[in-house]
Image (tube, rainbow, N blue to C red):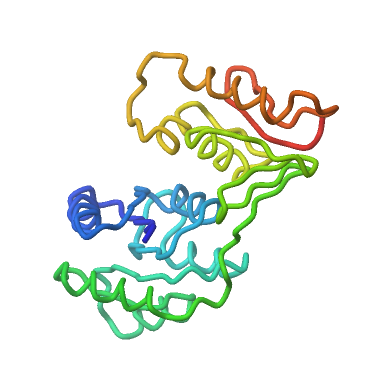
Length: 226
């Protein structure tokens, strides 16, 4: 499963992330509510594990309320030192699906995460990403533009998928290094520029309107406008 962990306590975050990764899950971590909300709203996750009290101007309750207002139905497990009944009720009423009080045993957290994952999904996840006449099928791993099949390599597919999931938004080189190459440092190479250039040749060459744009001193963006 792909899990988003929003936890500001670095020690707790390391403990939970390590345990979930050791059991085969992919874990993204945000250290404050604002970053957590951005990730949860812009990417696809199977489970959200959220602390109640978060820095960044967005606490756990507000984060979940915002997601639910946007139609996001990803299951949410709250983690919190707030153990009073009314606090647990507040979290569940905000849209949380389960509530685990700190301190907790990892075995119980894992069992609750897996129980949430077994619940039938209300909304099927998107299997296609599209902008203008460019379409990506996530199941068959194919890309077409104007009905014409485009042959791209696995890394190019991940790069294009990330751009499409953030269509109309600036995607920085740091974001691409982390999400597409799984680098958490700058390798001081032009690997991103090379791959974007190759992708442009396949996606934009021969078409009237380019879709992949360079945003000077910022990164890249995929959009339908010229």
